[in-house]
Length: 615
Ligand code: ADP
Ligand code: MG
Ligand code: ZN
Picture 1 (tube, rainbow, N blue to C red):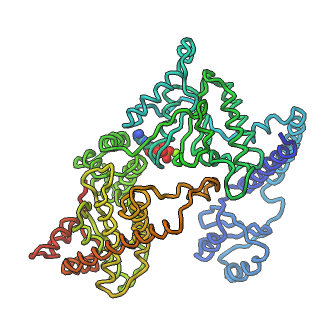
Picture 2 (cartoon, protein in one colour):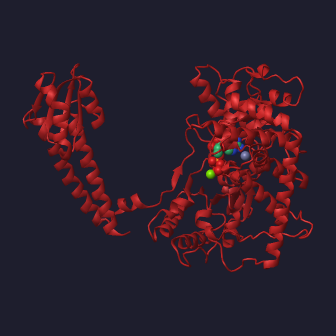
């Protein structure tokens, strides 16, 4: 440990404590700290009886005898005095005092300083001692940030983990080992050294790893990959060393490295060239992992949503030799997760968790937890005693599209544009095979979107057909097509739609082998994550010719889909106009009205009080 550094840390501590005391000393007279603005406001509103000036510190006493203090910088003092005080002091409204040192008695003034000095000497004393004993505590202080969780209090166990039955079974083996290593070592069983949890964000990787620790009742050291990287040069590697040292002392235990991709990216890469801090940390990690025996009672766990960028060395036998993928929950999983997160929340009678689970394909466990929580907040805000179904409906939109941005002002022209744009998506979607039913169309801005068409799948699909993807592109382009067709002008509002449509078209051609001319080949550039630190060496290169062909195919797909969108809108122009007008008038319309737009006897009056009915 670097002695100089640790002394500095003590100095900072001493200063922090002195500072705290200093502030505390001001509070001894029972005054409340307020901001300068608040102080001035109090003076202006005539609440102040007396003002005491003590250098830059100003004390106020209000009509009830309550005291407040704030600071006015020396530069501002003249202005403060002439502008806010002078007239009031002259009129006798405010009594003005200047502070004399003796006021408040000897003890009040001197005691804090005595204490400060005493503490200072005490700290100095400790500091030299620490220096002599090779600054042990200081070392502890800067050591590793790994947080140690012991299985006490409200730990998570497998009972709190919904679904994921196979994953739990697999992890149970590890729990069993940690609980009773002797049983395994006696018969020479081979236990995995490291388990890598792989899955999209919010699927519960961190959560399930905590459950493993809770279940096993062993110490759980956790550190996030990104925390390693915040450290000074050379510290990352030594933290890894310390982490393993501590773990060995407390085995059996679990070391969990969350977001391991931050340290575990492929080596010899990155734009900064070879030997960086991250690589040293990774090397140290590999060394340590090799340095303990399989049955020492330490299990390494790690989580990532980018397994593709991990250094191969991490995945070699003897390191993270087991991978468990965690995917999105299915209907049953979602139902179980909802049950867990509503366990101690009162629900209204008409809330049907099964129905909610059915209508939320694609939601991660984190989304579902968020949904329940938002719904609870909304219900509480309406002073409801139980969570209302309507709150859950509203929360689901919030989770998907972000909160309403009611403060955004839009001009009538913008309103017209957004109305036709969203109407375009909705109408096109209705006539596109494989498209999900429209439950809501709104022009109220949410999150980053100017408007939003809420389509909810009827059932879950695990794979997508060519027809379905093409349909998706048509719907995406429906917004722009409606602007073009009805307003004769196009806007920037469609840029996100176009970006997504382009990505889909690219995937069709280059990834899913859905192109006639290019055939069933994968043309994706797997090395497209250069900025994330992948090697320049193995990049696949395509000929100019191939790239041009991919481009051409994509352009053809997009233009074909766009024509289709235009065509559908022309055929349903009346409904398009009806919908856009309803949106301009009432901003949000729901499924019942949307379906009625296509009927002869549609009357907007009938749908005024509709709300979202999803669940
Ligand atoms: P990740 O680490 O994969 O990004 P988290 O572990 O942070 O995801 O999970 C986010 C939240 O989702 C957790 O706090 C937890 O409340 C909830 N959650 C995740 N998986 C489950 C599950 N299987 N059962 C119940 N809740 C879960
Ligand atoms: Mg996580
Ligand atoms: Zn759009």
